Image: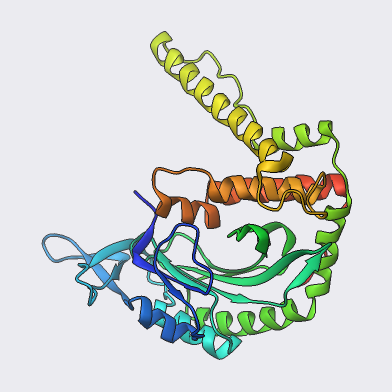
Length: 339
């Protein structure tokens, strides 16, 4: 299944998104509800599952994205138990507006409307002249597979990255289960987290400054990238010969892909990357980390819509998280507990 932006439903404030999709606001600042309506609102509902003969399938219910004004037909997003009480997209936006009371920076819908995300801008800071913008990101999957979550995402302006450092750096991190308490929890936690994030912006800046001060050696860079893009393990001879041949071919393909990734990140760090010659980035752990981020956010993809989700929540985001963790480890960064 292709995981991508639902019907071009992406809205960004001022800066065009790298994927070139959706709506960009030049001079207008809007809240989440208004932005949701501008990009194309939609709704979901739950419905009891029944058999072809009309009997109830207990205790299961379907999550259905309803038909939209744009002509998109109904779609079943998932099936869940009776305890599942989804926070719908409009409710998510309303809770955001009440808890945060700030214009959105970005808002988007993915996976045929199953996932809605909203970001808000936090205080901006500089590291040796390298400008960093800090954001809070609300992610609400409504298909029953994941909890809603709130994370922090610092963004390096010189690269206009859509990176996901929050899982590692942002010890402020909540998950909200879709039950009868979900809407209250989302409001309380989002309001609390937004206030904490603004109050403790200095801690994030100090952590990033350590990365920008620590100079990584050639050996350390190679070891970090080997961890971020590891070679696949050799397969065990536990299948017929023709299957083992296929496995080995796939292993060789993945190994080549990882080697190319390591090589291209080093090229970005070595001068080809955006802002790689700044004082904060040149030869530092911060520069190496951002080389991985730039590679994952901007490298070629057959499907740019799918690449956007991967960069925020999928394998590309995972690679960026591993890069931060490894760079922080060698630099001795202290990740503060901000809960």
